[in-house]
Image (tube, rainbow, N blue to C red; front, side):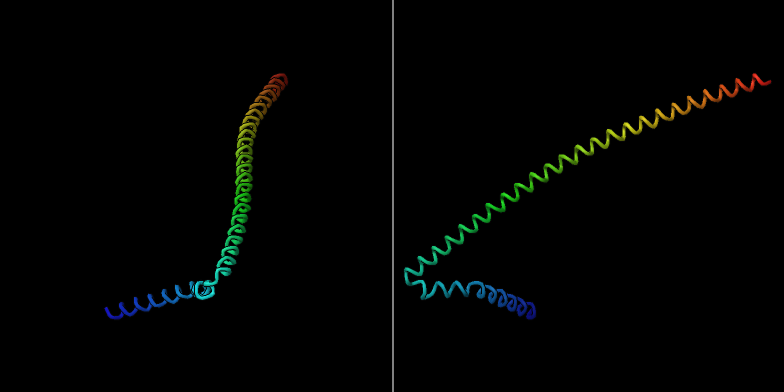
Amino acid sequence: MDSLFVERLAQRDEVEGRFCELFKEVQIMVGPQLEDESMERKLIVALKSDLVEKDLRIGELEEILQLRNKDYERLNDELISLNIENNILRDKLQNMTEENSKLVKRWLNKVQQEADAMNENLH
Protein backbone atom coordinates (compact mmCIF):
# COMPACT_ATOMS: atom_id res chain seq x y z
CA MET A 1 0.00 0.00 0.00
CA ASP A 2 2.78 2.42 0.95
CA SER A 3 4.75 1.61 -2.19
CA LEU A 4 1.69 2.32 -4.33
CA PHE A 5 1.20 5.63 -2.55
CA VAL A 6 4.87 6.57 -3.03
CA GLU A 7 4.70 5.57 -6.69
CA ARG A 8 1.62 7.70 -7.28
CA LEU A 9 3.25 10.67 -5.55
CA ALA A 10 6.31 10.27 -7.76
CA GLN A 11 4.11 10.19 -10.86
CA ARG A 12 2.27 13.30 -9.70
CA ASP A 13 5.55 15.12 -9.09
CA GLU A 14 6.78 14.16 -12.56
CA VAL A 15 3.57 15.40 -14.22
CA GLU A 16 3.66 18.59 -12.19
CA GLY A 17 7.28 19.17 -13.21
CA ARG A 18 6.42 18.75 -16.88
CA PHE A 19 3.45 21.06 -16.47
CA CYS A 20 5.64 23.74 -14.92
CA GLU A 21 8.15 23.40 -17.77
CA LEU A 22 5.40 23.97 -20.31
CA PHE A 23 4.33 27.26 -18.82
CA LYS A 24 7.68 28.57 -17.59
CA GLU A 25 8.14 30.81 -20.65
CA VAL A 26 4.56 32.05 -20.48
CA GLN A 27 4.94 32.96 -16.83
CA ILE A 28 8.02 35.00 -17.68
CA MET A 29 6.10 36.87 -20.37
CA VAL A 30 3.04 37.38 -18.19
CA GLY A 31 5.17 38.71 -15.37
CA PRO A 32 6.50 42.24 -15.08
CA GLN A 33 7.31 42.62 -18.79
CA LEU A 34 3.67 42.72 -19.83
CA GLU A 35 2.79 45.42 -17.39
CA ASP A 36 3.93 47.82 -20.03
CA GLU A 37 1.03 48.35 -22.44
CA SER A 38 3.27 48.63 -25.50
CA MET A 39 4.70 45.18 -24.82
CA GLU A 40 1.17 43.81 -24.63
CA ARG A 41 0.36 45.38 -27.98
CA LYS A 42 3.52 43.98 -29.53
CA LEU A 43 2.66 40.56 -28.20
CA ILE A 44 -0.89 40.84 -29.54
CA VAL A 45 0.39 41.93 -32.96
CA ALA A 46 2.89 39.07 -33.01
CA LEU A 47 0.23 36.56 -32.00
CA LYS A 48 -2.20 37.90 -34.62
CA SER A 49 0.52 37.67 -37.25
CA ASP A 50 1.25 34.10 -36.21
CA LEU A 51 -2.47 33.32 -36.35
CA VAL A 52 -2.72 34.72 -39.89
CA GLU A 53 0.28 32.62 -40.97
CA LYS A 54 -1.28 29.51 -39.46
CA ASP A 55 -4.61 30.26 -41.16
CA LEU A 56 -2.81 30.62 -44.51
CA ARG A 57 -1.01 27.34 -43.91
CA ILE A 58 -4.32 25.67 -43.07
CA GLY A 59 -5.77 27.00 -46.34
CA GLU A 60 -2.80 25.68 -48.31
CA LEU A 61 -3.09 22.28 -46.67
CA GLU A 62 -6.83 22.17 -47.35
CA GLU A 63 -6.16 22.90 -51.04
CA ILE A 64 -3.56 20.14 -51.15
CA LEU A 65 -6.02 17.78 -49.49
CA GLN A 66 -8.72 18.67 -52.03
CA LEU A 67 -6.32 18.04 -54.91
CA ARG A 68 -5.31 14.70 -53.45
CA ASN A 69 -8.94 13.74 -52.98
CA LYS A 70 -9.64 14.60 -56.63
CA ASP A 71 -6.62 12.57 -57.70
CA TYR A 72 -7.81 9.69 -55.55
CA GLU A 73 -11.29 9.84 -57.09
CA ARG A 74 -9.84 9.99 -60.60
CA LEU A 75 -7.58 7.02 -59.92
CA ASN A 76 -10.45 5.11 -58.37
CA ASP A 77 -12.64 5.81 -61.42
CA GLU A 78 -9.83 4.71 -63.71
CA LEU A 79 -9.34 1.54 -61.70
CA ILE A 80 -13.04 0.75 -61.93
CA SER A 81 -13.08 1.31 -65.69
CA LEU A 82 -9.98 -0.86 -66.13
CA ASN A 83 -11.60 -3.62 -64.09
CA ILE A 84 -14.69 -3.44 -66.28
CA GLU A 85 -12.55 -3.54 -69.42
CA ASN A 86 -10.60 -6.48 -68.01
CA ASN A 87 -13.83 -8.39 -67.32
CA ILE A 88 -15.10 -7.70 -70.83
CA LEU A 89 -11.82 -8.88 -72.35
CA ARG A 90 -11.88 -12.04 -70.23
CA ASP A 91 -15.39 -12.79 -71.46
CA LYS A 92 -14.29 -12.24 -75.05
CA LEU A 93 -11.28 -14.49 -74.53
CA GLN A 94 -13.46 -17.22 -73.08
CA ASN A 95 -15.92 -16.94 -75.98
CA MET A 96 -13.12 -17.01 -78.54
CA THR A 97 -11.53 -20.01 -76.85
CA GLU A 98 -14.84 -21.89 -76.90
CA GLU A 99 -15.43 -20.94 -80.54
CA ASN A 100 -11.90 -22.04 -81.44
CA SER A 101 -12.46 -25.39 -79.73
CA LYS A 102 -15.71 -25.90 -81.65
CA LEU A 103 -14.04 -25.04 -84.95
CA VAL A 104 -11.14 -27.40 -84.27
CA LYS A 105 -13.58 -30.21 -83.40
CA ARG A 106 -15.60 -29.58 -86.58
CA TRP A 107 -12.45 -29.53 -88.68
CA LEU A 108 -11.18 -32.75 -87.06
CA ASN A 109 -14.56 -34.41 -87.67
CA LYS A 110 -14.50 -33.32 -91.32
CA VAL A 111 -10.93 -34.54 -91.79
CA GLN A 112 -11.86 -37.83 -90.10
CA GLN A 113 -14.84 -38.25 -92.43
CA GLU A 114 -12.66 -37.56 -95.46
CA ALA A 115 -10.08 -40.07 -94.21
CA ASP A 116 -12.81 -42.66 -93.62
CA ALA A 117 -14.20 -42.03 -97.12
CA MET A 118 -10.74 -42.51 -98.66
CA ASN A 119 -10.24 -45.71 -96.70
CA GLU A 120 -13.59 -47.07 -97.93
CA ASN A 121 -12.64 -46.26 -101.51
CA LEU A 122 -9.39 -48.18 -101.12
CA HIS A 123 -11.11 -51.36 -99.94
